[in-house]
Length: 107
Length: 262
Image (tube, rainbow over all chains, first blue to last red):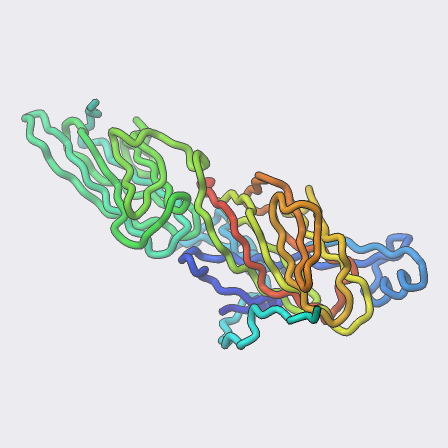
């Protein structure tokens, strides 16, 4: 298991079918007030709760990591990834008994 | 059977694009020399595992190439995972000229590629590989986003993910969006909001009808037969996603073809 140091997403670098998984960070949400000024998520929520207008849109994550091959190769001939970002860390994650479980609802 | 004339200046170039670890290919064939003797030749080729091209040159004796086969000698790729092209190259690998393309197509553990016989097929012809993919488990407050890998072409068949909402009172509305790496070209939502403190399983797939809800399940209908190119994305877009809301790792079933990356 690996953790992306940019987005903190966790992933298996090799899939169950033997194929390599190339992680790429998801975009981030950016919030704006009615005049287009960048605000925080909480500010946007407060504006909306008060009946005002706030906007959100997805933008690329700063220092995004994208492990997909870039088309460039190093001197040894290895494919270089599109963007290193902040790197990735190997982690040990023991599956819990509730992994994949769904809450039981009454009725 | 039609033989192909070759000289000592010619080589057989084996090129592959592959998405599976540990694949190894063996190449064997015969050249009939001017004296009428059938001379066997053979070689090994190890494809890259990241869908980028890898090529191997195999020297050939003077004569007529009568047949060549490529078969899988390690791992067990299925259709859609290991694409091979056989060409005759005159000169060196860097400065050679392509004299002929003999065969191209997918190889599997039980289906070799052969000249003559297999023909020249495109990597996007026919069915692709059916792959069940576990995506990235995003941190709390972060959306799911899966990127079509370099050198691949995907058709999303179905996708499942869990959203656990925190205690913040708000109506989250989950949709699945498709973009070209930057700009959305489709966004499809569920018609039921998700409130605080819930754990809902969302299933998105083609032709599942109007968004419905059943207990802790949510359904999202996505386009039929939509194909995405490399760098395109499948992602969630959640209205009112809170900092403590937590998506689990998505599980996707996709049909994948190799496009042939450099």
